[in-house]
Image 1 (tube, one colour):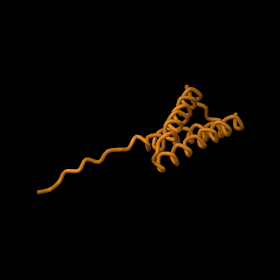
Image 2 (cartoon, rainbow, N blue to C red; image 1 turned 90 degrees about the vertical axis):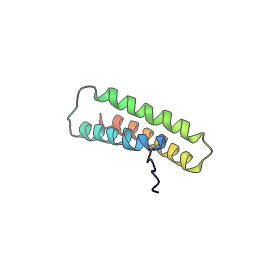
Image 3 (cartoon, helix red, strand yellow; image 1 turned 30 degrees about the vertical axis):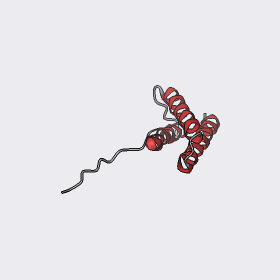
Image 4 (cartoon, rainbow, N blue to C red; image 1 turned 90 degrees about the horizontal axis):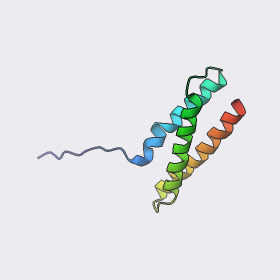
Length: 87
């Protein structure tokens, strides 16, 4: 008979879907002078999410996890630098 396979989302990819696009949107709004309420708070929360997820991922043994962890940490540093330059 047919096999039912459940498709699940790996928790490693959640920052790629949530935190990175949200921070990019914040930086775009900051650049064009369209601030929104709680914008800095959301930026800090999502950046901390990237740092924590990146720190956890770097410590894993899998190469894919380490690479994504480094991507998250580097993107958090870039987002912080860009936000300071644009503000």
